[in-house]
Length: 225
Image 1 (cartoon, rainbow, N blue to C red):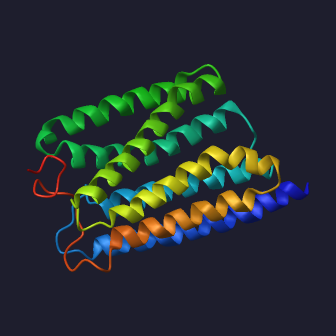
Image 2: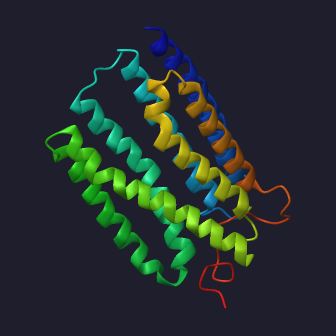
């Protein structure tokens, strides 16, 4: 099918670009003098890598290399967890920097829930119904967070306005992807996704900021002042 060929070629291109940009983010993070697993470049680098792997699995299914089965969906759900947890971590360190002792508890609770749903849900509809809303809330939560940090001038080491644009594009890409594929315009969704990843990379590296790009400290958190 022509649409399948277009789907595969377009998505593979997006996957390759995502891997390159993610690798660049992680490389820049690894060159920092002080590195933390809660640093935003690391978190989003992991997020974009896992997103690319998820897109790759979708492509293999579309190309009939992998079966369109519940088992494959379970694997995808576990991969998507790799995008959800960095996003949740980012939300926690920005909004609740003074409650670090509770961060691990929250992350572990979500991890247990996610694994149980991914492995034990009886069908694909249940998996999607129980997991997709969590992703949507996190994505909108991050978009709202960067909108606030942009307007308030907090989190200066990250270009919040660019992160807001990036997250908005990702949301648009995800919400419109199925419809665009049906119309034979999958390359539009993939182009939006690549553009969003590129913008986020620039925002997180922030070449305009002369300093170390790291996770927000109490002086740059939402609880400042």
